[in-house]
Image (cartoon, rainbow, N blue to C red; front, side, top):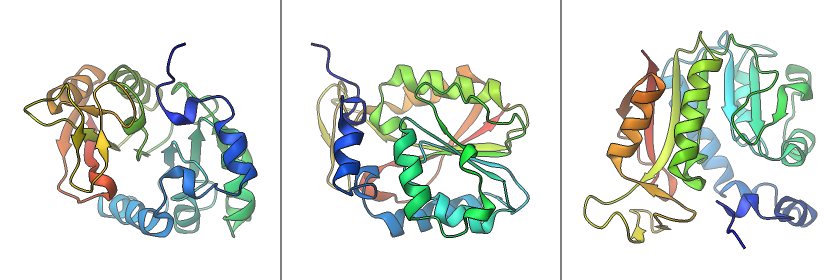
Length: 222
């Protein structure tokens, strides 16, 4: 039996978690801390209320509950592997529902972005590629680049492999153990850079200290 690339892809994972009221926990925990951090980073990177933001892997709207009040109405879009998880976040966590149509939360498991407008200015994929093999990083970056010609920048995170021993498990600075062959995945920096270049981005590693030792990248369309 083939192992799924992450626990999120396991049959019944979302049904079980949502039945137990764990819509906050399954997106990585640290709900308030991480959501505030994400919006602060985006604003530092130039996100303004008039921009259109795509939150890739938005889950139960950990960022969305903060970005929706900040952005002009209708300017937040979210995608996630689980439509049920997004709906739970919308129902229980989002206070200003008049600023976001639920139709802008789109189930999408392969970075196809169905129905997301080509006019997206900013995109963020926080703790998405950390749960996927590098082939999905390559696919995701290339599809973001093609789908959104108006994109100003993409921010995303990965776990990086150590320069020595990248083919072995590695304990990240925040304590989580990452792996070369299963989730949470780590990647050599050279691999991340190569995928970004092939997709048409200029990549910069940013110095932010993120939960669990994730590394933040800024990708600018060339």
